[in-house]
Image 1 (cartoon, rainbow, N blue to C red):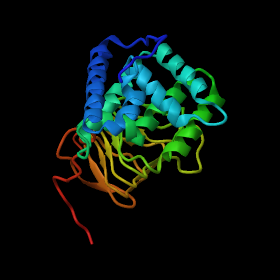
Image 2 (image 1 turned 60 degrees about the horizontal axis):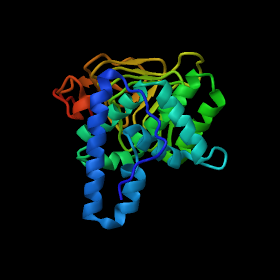
Image 3 (image 1 turned 135 degrees about the vertical axis):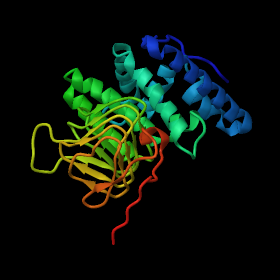
Image 4 (image 1 turned 90 degrees about the horizontal axis):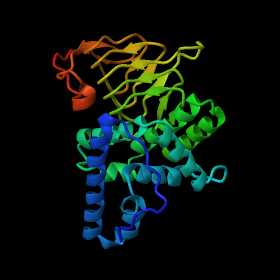
Amino acid sequence: MTGTESNVVFFPIEDAARGVVAGLWQTLREEAAAAVQRDPALGRAMNSAVLMHASFGHALSHRLAIKLADHDVDRDELLALIYGAYSDKPGLLGAAAADLQAVKDRDPSNGEVLTPFLYFKGFSALQAYRVGHWLWTMGRRHLARHIQSRISEAFAIDIHPAAVMGRGIMLDHGSGLVIGETAVVEDDVSILQNVTLGGTGKQTGDRHPKVRRGALIGAGAKILGNIEVGVGAKIGAGSVVLAPVAPYTSVVGVPARPVGKPHTALPGVTMDQSLSEPEYII
């Protein structure tokens, strides 16, 4: 069964992203159809999540609405809300496509777009945040906070709707991730689980980290305060970062200190967590 929706809403897409979104949508449909062929028990699930929908925007809207619906704001209300965001901001679907492609390219456990679209909570949480951020910028602060709360409850990921997130971002696993109000995460960044981009607890105003393009943040790292993590920087797992990190520099430890240079210019893209110049101090 591969029917399409009636009364289809057509979402605008940036010219630069139009072909990417169309190609990704075609791949997503092919992978869903192949999954049904391999296991017919998935027929209803794949039809509901992918095959019945007319576009990537419709499928993603329905997926998010189902995940985030609750007694206070039901699925149909959320669907209308997400449709509104995608209709008003053409860049949202291009960003979602870039995020989904990033997961496919960077996660060694996954070689397709279907699995992260359906099951990876880091991807879903990031797309739900984008809707919440749209609401925040529109002045609809309490509804944005509702979306933030539902993301936290559904995915164990807390991203303030005022934070600024680029595209091509991978939130790997995602559990325990916290991103504060004035944080900035630029394009092509990868962040693993239990990471905090937080304040120091004593400041107001602009108080959260600025993570520049292509950085890689390892599991359990805590980056605190209005400090910059430079382009292509790498933060080792479990590190506590309290000072700026220079571009193309690897830091580890508590507190974190420089220990070498990444093997590649953008470790957030390559996911290379090794060091070219290891240094050991007992």
